[in-house]
Length: 218
Image (cartoon, rainbow, N blue to C red; front, top):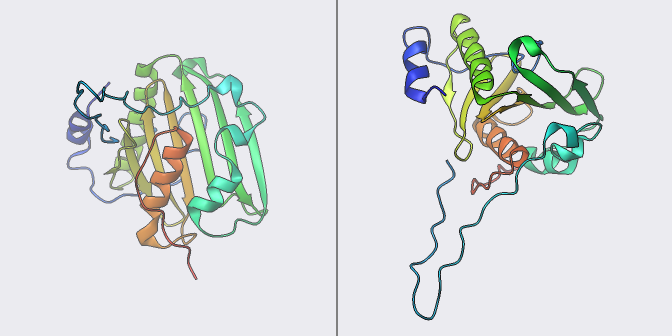
């Protein structure tokens, strides 16, 4: 897997400001560190407690027909901090052997007929290398469009924030899996966008986060 530094050298000279639309659309795109909580030193009267770990995110075969297994609508509304009238939509896409994808789940939240206000896509690949390749394709596409890519780790996973005039997204490289979360612009304030994306992606990946939730807009 390429490091942040390796990807940064590839992107150097191409761009610096964050933006890419439709990260979760298209069959050929992914639709792309929590600090350790150390236990106290063991003592004769107080042995060290085990470090807390996050519950693993469910695999795609457990997510079929169930967006609640990706992230519950109530959690999306709570994190976004604004009402999301409309339907929750679900789409399962089959494997794409040519790119090593074994499956994809896409859930839309707050779809009022003009598309979802929030969209979450989970892609699974046959290997970490295949997932890395798709992340690289996404970052390269952002660079070629003149957009800047901003690093935004999710726990120990590499993540990147991308945006355009219509959407803001975070793409997370999670081993043999990629997660893409997309918000319609102006759903939350510009200052809250990255916080909301980080919270949503952390919840999907079951990664603990201490980020303060943004306040709801009045």
